Image (cartoon, rainbow, N blue to C red; front, side, top):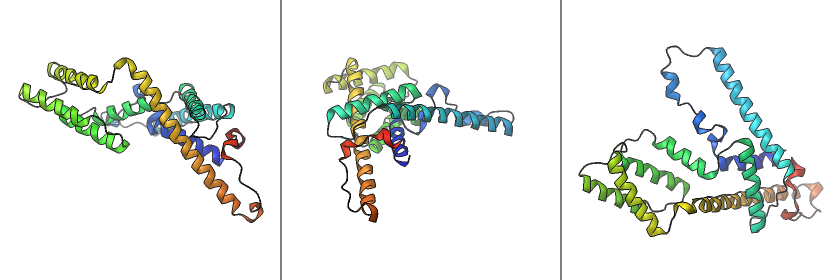
Amino acid sequence: MAFSTRILSKSRQLCGSQAILRQEHVTPVRFYAKEAAPPTALKGDEMLKNIFLEVKSKFETALGIFRKEKITIDPDDPVAVSQYAKVMKTVREKANLFSESQRIQYTIQTWTQDIPDARTYLLTLKDIRIKRGDLGAEAMMMDALDKVEKEINKPLMRNDEKSMALLTAEFDKINKQLGIRKEDLPKYEEQLELKVAKAQLEELKKDALEAMETQTKREEFKDEAMPDIKSLDIRNFI
């Protein structure tokens, strides 16, 4: 069971800590501060109960899928990586969890929803990407913002639809320069999911090897050879 818990832990990293709630169901904390009276203990208990039942349902759904699907712990095999990515996609769809791209979008929306100006928005976006370790065209985006603000002769505010359209047009030019097309977004998302799947399989392989090496140090297992990691069937540990 400990091994299966590790698997689910890694899969939840894919979806993020917010994955248990759909974005349209998320209620900002400040909403409760505006209530005329604080919620009663019963309502609070009922809320916690509902959250627990939802998380429990999602966990059991994911566990049920892991019990049925064969996963080969071989991050160097493209077929194994693709199969693992398909399993994780099934988990997300059945348990109503975020995909990696949805998680990124949710993070950006959460961190930037109250930012009024475009410059602070882009700087915050840069911070998010730094934390993810995947900086991209931030410098080009800031250059585009400088160009637009110089043209309108004032800071660009996000509610200024006319000026924001100018910035969007500049971003379109950057995308064209980089060879990024909107119609290719599904392909980019698939590539991202494969990258994440490979990284998770590498973590699973590392954890499994560490667990087996720990076992071989015990007296009763010292004469037993470690099995090939690719031969392990995760379903036997759930």
